[in-house]
Length: 486
Image (tube, rainbow, N blue to C red; front, top):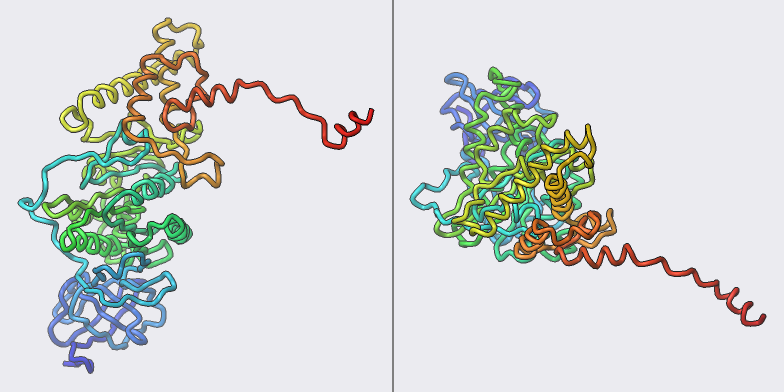
C-alpha cells in the first residue's frame, strides 16, 4: 500500500473527464466527502462523491483540472472540506477553501470546521416569531420578514434581485448588532467587488464576512460554497451567541451547480434536466438556517426564476422552505415601479393578527383587496375607458394607483444612477401613509406626487414644488450693467 511522506494513504489517478476524476487506492478507500489533493503542490482539490468498487473512488474537482494526468499521485487528506471560523474572518473576503481573495494577508488564529454539519435538533429551536424590519415600505407592510426565518427574492433576469438584496444589506447591517455573511454562489465577480467597495465606504465591513464562488469556477466549488458560509454563520450563532444575517445571491445557482455535478457523475436527470436529489440537497442546506435558544440566522436569498416560470422545479422546491416569498414582476419593472415587488403574488406567514397586530393585518388585507380589484378592472379600462366605470370603482382605481406609487422607494444603492436620495422608512410611517391613502386623504394630489418618496408627508411638499411657477429668467450680468448705463 502506497503512503505519502505525511503518513496519509496515497492513490493514483486512473481517469480524468472534465471535472470528474477517478482514483485507485490499494488499501482502505477514503470516506465519502473526503478531500483528495493532486497535481503540483496539491493544487487540484477533489471531493469524493462515490466509491465505485473495492479499489476505485470517483470525485468531483473543486478546482480546474488542467495539468492533471493519469498515473499522478493523489493524497488523501483524511477529512472533508473545512471552513475557517473565528473573529479573524470578519471584514474579510474568502473563497470556498477559506483563502483570502481581498488582496490582504492570509488568515491567522482561526479554527477550521467541516462544512458538512447537521441542522440543530428540534429541541434547540426557538418557536418565537418576531418581525425583522428592513426599512423598505413594500416589504415591511405586505411581506414582513421573520427574525430567524428565510426570505426569498424571486424574479427573472434583470428585474432587480441583486439591487434589492444590496439595499437590504445597506439598511440592516448598519443598525444590526450581529454579523452579516454574504455568500455569492455562481454570480458575477463584478457584483462582489462592487459590494466589497460599497460596504467598506459605508463603514460596515468590520461586521461582515464575504465568501464567493463565482460563475467562472467549477461546479464543485459553487456547490459547496453555501455549506462553507453556513458553517461560519453557525459559529457566530452557537459559539458567540450573536444574531447572523445570511445573504445568498443566488440560491438557484446552488441548485444549478448540483445539477451539473449530478450530470457529470452520470446520474439520470429528473424533470427538466434537474438532479434527482435536488429536494434533499436543498433541504440539507436550508434546514441549517434556524432560530435556536442561543441566537438566530436570518436568511435573505435571491432566487433566479428561469424564463419567469414560477412552476420551474427549482423555484417550487425553494418556495417550500421560506417564511416569506417576495416576487419581483417584470411588468412592474417596465412601468418604473421600483422595487418591482408584485404584492398579489408575494406572501409572508408573518401577516397574522397575532404577530403583526390587528391594525397592520387589516391594512395589509385592505391594500391587497384594493390592488386586486384594480387588477380586475384593468381589462374594462383598456376596452371601454375609465369613464365607463362606476364612481365607486373609479375611487378604487385612484386609491390603487396612489398605493402603487407610494410603495415605490428611492434606494441608497442606486443614488448614483437615479440622482434621488435614498430613503429609509419606518414601519410606523409606511403604515400611516397607506392608511391615509386608503382614506382618500391625498385624492386632491396628482399620482406622481406619491412616486419615489419616503414618508407620505413628503408628497405635499413634492406637489407644491411641482406646481410652483418657474422663476422669471434674470438678465445676464453684462446685460444688467448695460441697462443701468442706459
